[in-house]
Amino acid sequence: MKKILVSACFLGQKVRYDGQHSLLEHTQIKQWQEEGRIVHFCPEMAGGLPTPRLPAEITSRHPVMVVNIEGEDVTPQFLHGAELAVEKVKEAGACCALLKSRSPSCGNRETYNGKFNDTLTPGSGVTASELQRHGIPVFNEREIGQLIEFIAMQETPEVLHPEER
Image 1: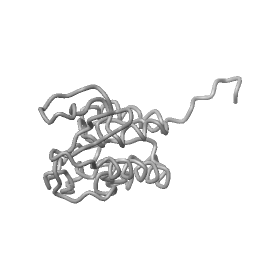
Image 2: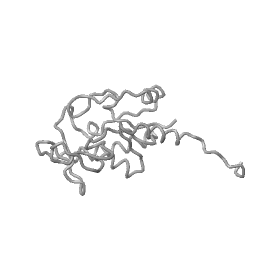
Image 3: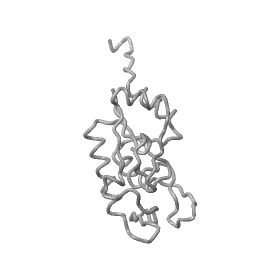
Image 4: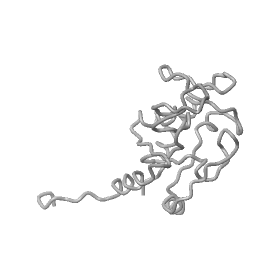
């Protein structure tokens, strides 16, 4: 059975910057939890940031820089959390990740633009980028259908052609 790294906030843990969670109630997630396939993780907490914490956004991608709303550089904590996420995936043998969209850590398609004006920009968060760089597919809560298909394909035994039997 393949394991999945999942943002801890989706599992009801109050680890978001605002001290809340982003509980994701989905029958497939519940089934995977019951099967022991979910590996929960919060890269921002793992990287050393407290909860609650000031909102942070990516202000530069090359090199990456993440600052909170007061202008404090929190890049080291974000980078450390991303490295720990890769370690966690390898340690657990996870095949993929389900992470919070739009997060400066976890967003896999877009994040906020670094100006704290609620404007989205294409690009991945720090942890999502690092996982993808290591070949780990990252899905968000709007892509659960694709995640379910991906897992099914990972677990479907290959069909042997008659000449290979």
